[in-house]
Length: 315
Image (cartoon, rainbow, N blue to C red; front, top):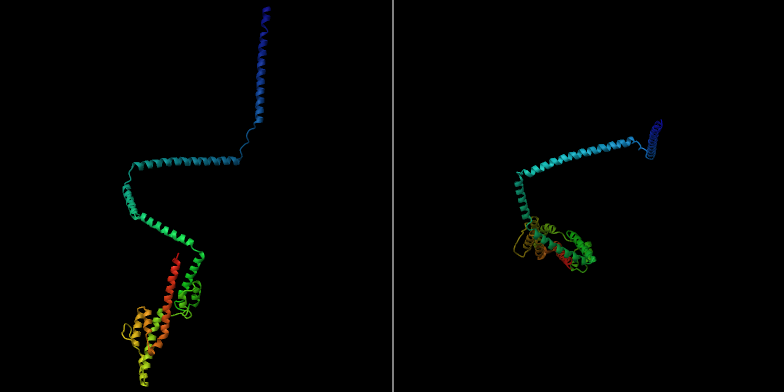
């Protein structure tokens, strides 16, 4: 009996251990559950995406897919291009030799065309140096004097235009004010109020002037009424010679004057007419004065033009 009493307490200790383990497991579960609840409280789940955000994500995904497809296509094209380049590198071009020969010919033509390029460049450099010198000279000029020269040039142009076929007193006065003391302007002063006909007008007037001179001379030589009648009848139809006619009579003088006019020699014609005498001379005086006036205008304008040119080129 005593042996049976010593073995009976063992089942109670096993139950107590199991109960302790169960309590520990339950406590672990409770602690884990507490930690889980606390973590969920501190880390709430993310909010659900809105429809607009989902649509944006889908659109971005579609765009990326399109880009990937294009990139893939480009990779294939690059592969084809590499294959074509390899083919060109291994296959000779049948027209390459002809094309190279054409290029050589064109290069040779260009070399011939520009063979004198150094000389042309040297000429340009020399011209540039000359222009630089002229610019430097102009920079040293007085602007006031330059303006006066320009005004004188303009006044001379107006004077030449006005004196071509009419009075030019106002233009001459303006020019003389800009260049006072010029003898040419003083020589033109008596002619300026009325001017002088042109060479063409003088040449057109001369036949009538010559006919009047010869008619006056014939009428003056008639001593009787019958002679004057014959002279008047002869003056109805006048046949006048023109050219290099010898003699000092009025007809020969007028013939040479007419020939000089045809040759464009107004000075020679005026010199011949100035030698007329007797009854013929007065009928030529008006024409001779106009001719001398035209010659004086041309002579003095030429001298003024030379003077202005010298002033413009003077340092």
